[in-house]
Image (cartoon, rainbow, N blue to C red; front, side, top):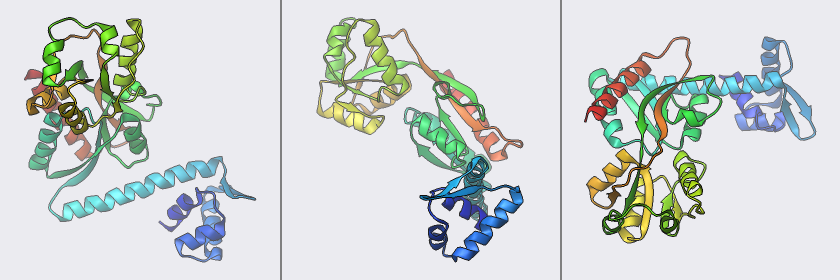
Length: 301
């Protein structure tokens, strides 16, 4: 643990003296510990520069592995706490905001009821979640793996497709439903959208470009469902595009309505993304099994 913590702290490029001070040890003790680590690898891991320590190629690899090992140890401690409290395991799961609670709630509830597994849920965009997954901060992710490169160390299982739906204030949706979409009129409307770097943001821009119109500049860029619903309730001129099941969730609350238009494009599918492991975690496999079961029920419904 002392060696791992030293490696991670040294990644910031400070002098060995400052690293030692931050860890609460003497500079000779830090030098001795670094020497012990380098003896293990039989090669230098850092070089001294005028600005501080700089990792070698081996040093960079050692820092990455040290971070992963420390993260795994933290998870191990949390799992031990969970087992002592009567649970069998603890999972850190990431999910993009456009995953409906109708999928997540029964999955998490059944996993605990059947197997006493506790789930800690993290919400973010796919790129941020995959960064945490690669860094061992998450055990698995429900997101859009097909839009992300560098999947060699990860594996994905497609769960279900997603289609887009246009939503608006109920009064606005009723007016829009009376005629087919006119892209010039749509381009002049007030939009709430995710950023253009996201699948929906990119596809909306592509739709308007294909129609020969300038893509709209969003009034607000957000993934937050409560913010979208709240803004639409306060401003009837706003429109947005979200996945169909998210649109259905918002329509049930009554704050927005779905415009009954059908788009000829689909979003990248939702996938379960996991790290490639020599021996898969039993809790992870049980989560995947339960998730598939709920996805099947949603599709049938």
